[in-house]
Length: 392
Image 1 (cartoon, one colour):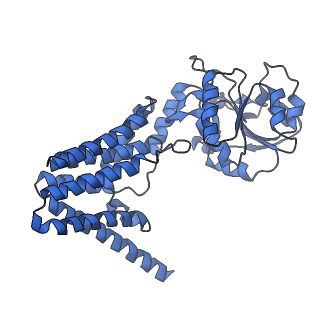
Image 2 (cartoon, rainbow, N blue to C red):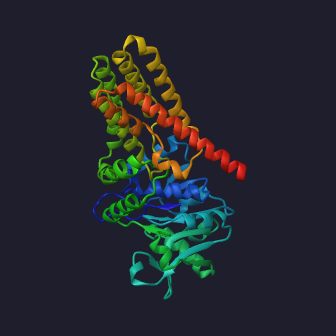
Image 3 (tube, rainbow, N blue to C red):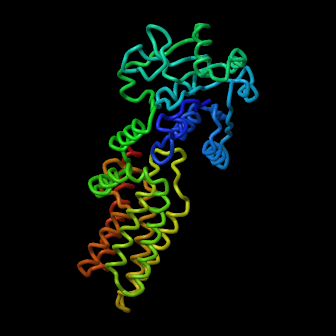
């Protein structure tokens, strides 16, 4: 159960509907609830906002079992007394460690922190503790609070009954709180600051040197700005496909430099398109943008070879191009070798090499270099795997 009872002071609706990454806070709460094993999602909102109904309908399209309720009386119909009830307060979601613990937890449990001024955003239980807004209750407690007045907070009511019955508590340390054991995002500014901090500290696996030192630093600056534009992801997806289509056009009129430049920009746009959703619920990736881009890219490269190769070497250069495509596929399937990640070929790096080669008038040589580069990487990766298997 996710509470949407507190309205944003700036008038943007429930706190949980405030932006976070390229979605909203509730996206993260729903993802967290599913990570903890929740089978049904209940959004608790005393005010039925139109945007909330649209949001719930969108989740149902993704086959997520979700309902919106207004008060404690409505809650009872969705849970039997034997069910477990995971509760998250407004704008609150747990870190991975708490998610893992609650997934295994069978008895009632509330998470608390020391009663300190720095945690003033959390509800105080007693002189010693404040509630972190995350708890596991038995659904039977809903009967105890079913008659509370409508203006009472259901989360607080559940908490009080649990505390009075001596429910177990887990104290989260200050050190764990600094590592985001629990996150509270009460307003848009706090949410934006948290999102920016996550981008600054995220680890991108399997980065080559170009991605680590050029592509990702630029994207890291751009992504928080793009999150502020609701349709940025759609525009970037369209931009990547437009670049690939334009590249095909330039290859037909024999402008290889312009064609490779647009393919390179398109590959960067495609990478940015996927990374906008790096933290998002379901990751939001389009299933068609990538394949369409690669089909157009392959067409552009093929036309470039046909248009620029001499007739006597055309067959050989087309063969090298086909080999390059196969090797790029092989790169994606070979075992990940951490020591080789910094030189791992990807579409951006390969197109960058081809662009530089075309600038100097050596596009054909660029294809040979790229094919040799990929072949050496695949060979080294397989040899390291064979060595590791032999030693094991």
